[in-house]
Length: 277
Ligand SMILES: [Zn+2]
Image (tube, rainbow, N blue to C red):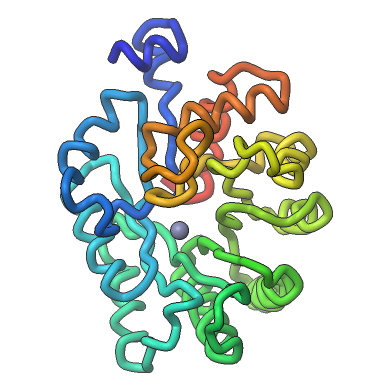
């Protein structure tokens, strides 16, 4: 527990209240095949409290659910990433829905729109809507991936959000790796969504993300790695893991003029509310 004590410099009680919550990781990715077990077992020792392993497709969802069953501190999200939606059929969509009833599956994700890659937009939009309505039906939060698709993502979420409210239900969730500007951030915060902040905030050229962090109340931010991707500075380009999250914490603390302990404590509490743990 030495590393964790270095973070908060206090006794056991503070230590327990000061564990980092990684709200978005892909430990099921092949990049962790060589040392997955060793790495995951080390996380609690280094002050990582909880991890959400996020499905990126059908196979990845199977692996995420298995990891959640194996490790007490890992929870899973089941969903199909926008650029993988061509694999979806009515049949496997029913299977995906059934995974949401599994123990420790706490969200639908990651789902959304990605216009950066050459993946048919009509297919993405169709299955994004289906997965959003599935989340409302199951009363689970959503994990949203949105790249170069700001207006369409907001429009789709708002449509389903309004529809849910009209039916006495709710749509909640997180905009993962939030990459848009302050105005868009405010729109999501107004709807009660959380914004996921990760390694990008440490990049020198990430002016927009730094502005969003400065401008947004800490109550609406959660920490994430998106590992193995998006390592923070000075590890940019290397394989990422939850062990690098203190670098993200430091940058958020610097931008907001608060202590790293406060960033860890408040974002962990937010994550607990987000995933209803
Ligand atoms: Zn991801």
